[in-house]
Length: 323
Image (cartoon, rainbow, N blue to C red; front, top):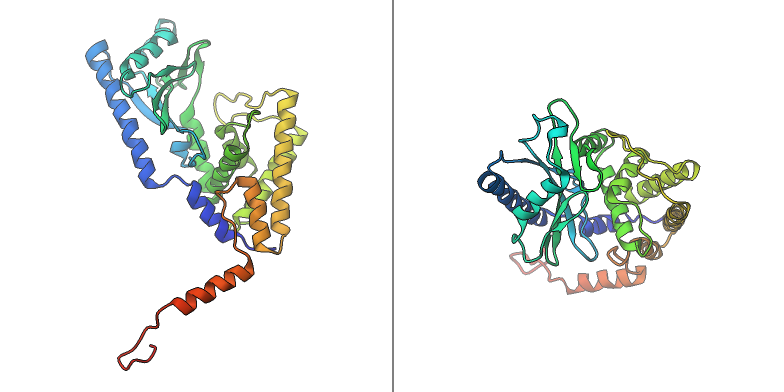
């Protein structure tokens, strides 16, 4: 078995969202918050809403995409409705319209009003999704869904649940989630793979803690545990309120996911069994794409080290001898 830990460390550094990018996303998010607060106060004459980040940004499991946009979610919590009975709340379509008007003109691209959120697009870079909630005291939030009305939803609970899982099982869990998201990004084509949220929950539920210093082995064991469970019962319940089924899929979609997971397991196991590190790295490249580094052949590596050694200047002491 070849040791690919250094290659996984390099790959993780490639896909990990570093502090500079996080700060850029945070600055843009805060600018949107400021604009919405101003619109509520000065145009609508209403109490400024509160905000709470959610999803992979808050879980610290975002990855750099191969292509396309970064995606962050920022929940808007409408304050002036939380003391009203639900039957007196404004319709979700009206509430969505407030947000659309508040952010129109913020970027050069018009906002998109989706069923579950309003999307602000920063051209060729990233987009910010703005789901809208009302949370009454002592109750779970309700999401403003344009077609379904006010529906149960509590993203804060999911973030807390995942962060508790990380506290219990270790930071390696977050790396496994990032690897799965990078795999999805590379392998997803016309047939969609599970959302980042679903992959996150699956990874946390089935994370194998036996390989704390071997991300390749931990990933392989975790994916195998996921596959074994879904092969018996293709089901996943949200681990917190509102406890809904997340994998109510057609037979063809189920079969596609199981096939892709099985292929991932087979390639990963072959990589783990491979004695030649270069060949092992190529098998991992087949899983993740060329963002995963290829280990140079041993003879090439030796030649490179020899050249570097001979080219390095000698460090001389006071008498002209090598120190």
